[in-house]
Length: 510
Ligand SMILES: Cc1cc2nc3c(=O)[nH]c(=O)nc-3n(C[C@H](O)[C@H](O)[C@H](O)COP(=O)(O)OP(=O)(O)OC[C@H]3O[C@@H](n4cnc5c(N)ncnc54)[C@H](O)[C@@H]3O)c2cc1C
Image (cartoon, rainbow, N blue to C red; front, side, top):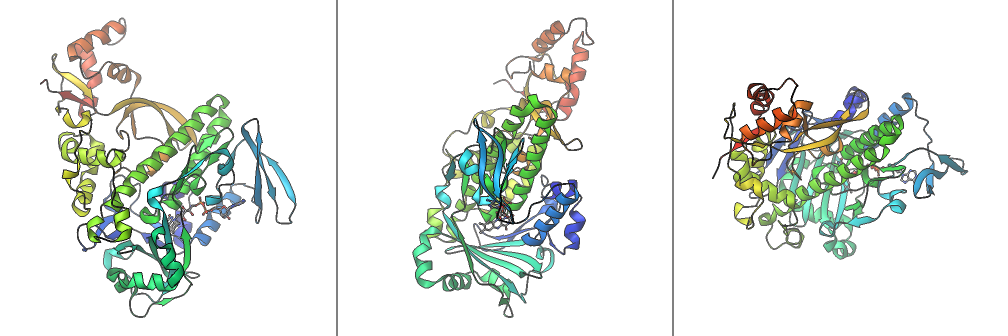
C-alpha cells in the first residue's frame, strides 16, 4: 500500500485520520505456542517499515477526495448494470445514476474495481474457486480492550485455534471501535454455525484462543453484532483483456491471513492506470501493456496462493486431529512450486548462492523454517538444476572458467513511476519462477530485474553455462569487430561489475 500512498502524497492524510501504524505481525502459529513476530522494518524486501490499519470507510473517502482533486468526475450512488461489449472489446458501461436514470458511458478502457461483484469480470472472464480454501469468517469490533504491549502494539496478531484462527487488528476507529477481532473458520462448520448460532460459535472458539483473549482483556465490550462472510477464494482466467482491466477483488481474492487484500487492490489499480496510460500514449503498446498486467496478476496470485497453502499446512501439529487443520494439512510439493523452491533454496541454493536478492531473504527463510511445521524430510523429489549446480564467486574470469548467469536474462517491462509509463528493460531477473518469500506486490509493480547496458546484455547472451570464458571473448570480439572491444581486456571490463554484483558466477567443472 505504501508505495501507492507515497506516490499520491497521501501518507500524511492517513496519519491525520488517526490510522494506527502497522509495524508488523505477531503469530501464534506453527511448531509451538510461543508468539513470534515479523517486523516490517527488518524485512528487506518490504518498501516501508510500516503500513496502516485503516477504517475502510474513512480510507476510501481519502482516496475518493484525492481522485476528485486530481480532476476525476465522481458519480456517487451509481450502479453499473451492464458492460458494453462490441466485437469482443469492452467499450464502456451502462449504469443507473443516483436519480434512477439509465446512462450509457463509453470509454477507451474500463477498470472494474467492483470487488467480488466483478461486474465486468463475470462476463469477460471465467471465475475459479480455490477448493482448498472454502472459508467462513465471523468478526466484530471491541472497545476497552487491553491491547498488546511494547513493540507489538501496532502489530496484527494472528492466533490459530482448534476451529481456525483469529485476527486481532488494532483499529482505534471512532465508528468501529478499538479493535477488529475475527475468526476464520471453514465451511466444514456451516451446519454447526447454523444450529448454534454465529454468536455462540464465535464465543466458543474465542474461549480456546488464550493469547487473543488476554489481549482483549476483562473490560472489553463488543460494539457490533457478529458479521459473517464466506467463500472468498477465487481467481479469474485473465485480469485484463481488450478494453478492460480487473483490479482488486474484481480479479481475485485469496484469504485474510496475509492481510494483502486492500494493498493488492490499490497496487492493482495503480498498475492498471500505468498500463492504460502507456496504451493511450502509444497505441501500438496496448497489447503488451494488457499482457504485462494479466501475466503479473496471475504470477502474483500464484505466489501468494502457494505461500498461503504453505503457511496453513505449517500449522498442522498445533491442532492435531482437528477437522479444520486436517483439511488444510495437505501441501502438495509437486503442485506448490513456491514451497518446493523454498525448501530447495533453504537446503541447497541459499548457502551456496550469494545472489544479493537471495541473501537478503535468508533470515526470513530461516525464521519460517524454524517456526512452521515443515521439515526438510518432506522433500522427496529432485527440485531442479538450481540445487545441484556447483557455483563459486570470482572477481576475475580465467580463460578456462565457465561463467554462469546468476538469474535469468530477460527482456521485460518496468514502471517509470515519474512518467507513469511502462518502459522496456533488459537485464537479469532474480525472482525465478515463484519465490514465495518475495514481496507479492513486486509482481504488480513489475519484475525484479537488474537492467543491463547493451554491451553487457550482448555479452551475457553468450554466457550459456557451458562455454569457457576464452571462447565467449573470442565470439564477442569477432562480433564487435571495429568497435571498442577489440581484446580480452576490454571485454573483461564489461563483465567485471557483473562479477562484483554477483550477477555472474563460475561453474566448477565436475
Ligand atoms: C473475512 C475477510 C477479512 C479481510 N481482512 C482484510 C484485512 O485485514 N486486510 C486487508 O487488506 N484485506 C482484508 N480483506 C480483503 C479486503 O476486504 C478486500 O480484498 C478489499 O476490500 C478489496 O478491495 P476492492 O476495492 O477490490 O473491493 P471492495 O472493497 O469490495 O469495493 C468494491 C466497491 O465496488 C462497489 N460496487 C460493487 N458493485 C458495483 C456496481 N455494480 N456498480 C458500482 N459499484 C459497485 C461496491 O459498492 C464497493 O464500494 C478481508 C476479506 C475478508 C473476506
